[in-house]
Length: 116
Length: 111
Image (tube, rainbow over all chains, first blue to last red; front, top):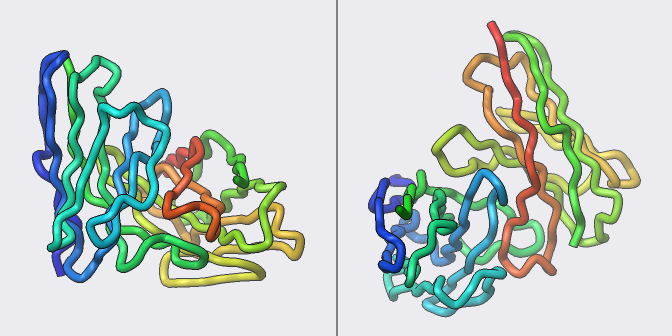
């Protein structure tokens, strides 16, 4: 079956603009999480959604937001872009939220965002 | 939350067995140990997960001593395509759905 699909793969934006990234999870997966990866900070958790509800949020400013739709697809939005937001944004899906012994998430290839 | 420590980098040659050790001294009773692999410009990929003793799948083995303060990922007979970053993660119910990645180990396999 198809894996996690993220669109677009690459994006260039200007400081101050906003951006929306999309993630389609594996069919049947209801949990979607987002991560930011930069050379300096590594992989950092942004937020987790399950059944259209945000269950957990990482330590990011309010400019970073997200949502999940009834078909489990998810979007994340970053407003008022800053140069430091340049990163690889990764989406991960799992059947149910990652808890306890359930630690297997399936990641997409990511969206490479460059802010100039 | 349990913190993990791994070597920053390792070198190996094709056909060798590679063992990457991860320290997690303050692992909690309900924490599981998970390893992910990441190739450049791709998302991480789940390799293996365990709680204690030894776990083996078609890709790797995971050795966990009785005190669970460390774990070792073993990759048998590596090939060039195993060149990647390997992350050791520790967490359980208290992780709240998030995977906490450390710095990872950059494995370089040479011909």
